[in-house]
Length: 149
Image 1: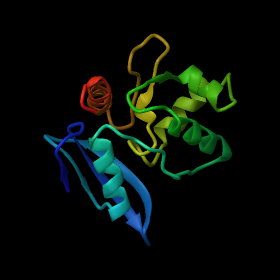
Image 2: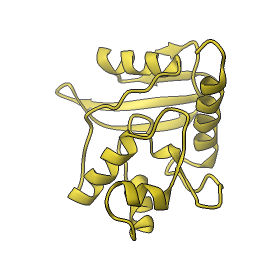
Image 3: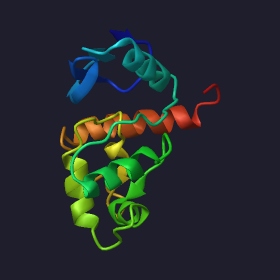
């Protein structure tokens, strides 16, 4: 499915028995997805309009779940540093571990690990590459500043 707006990426979703197991991101000429159920298509449609609501997607250890919950609270178009995210999930000295948890996020875009940047303002790493992270961050910043959100 293609969307009129959105970052120029393709979202590939793996489902089993109606539950999302994981998603992957790829560079693309348009914003599109494969494998999505109607609720995920609706979420992506809203995202393409500049709206992002948290989804109840959690995984991994209790620490990873803390990180995923904190990630889900980062507003659309905003960023946070790894250190501030570590503080937000009650692990103030675990910025590197937070980065590792972000890298293992099986639901990129849906749980917005792309919104986490380095303390010096650089965008930092991303499991799917810096170009995809840049496209998503640029899209969100543009939508946030657009007069007709």
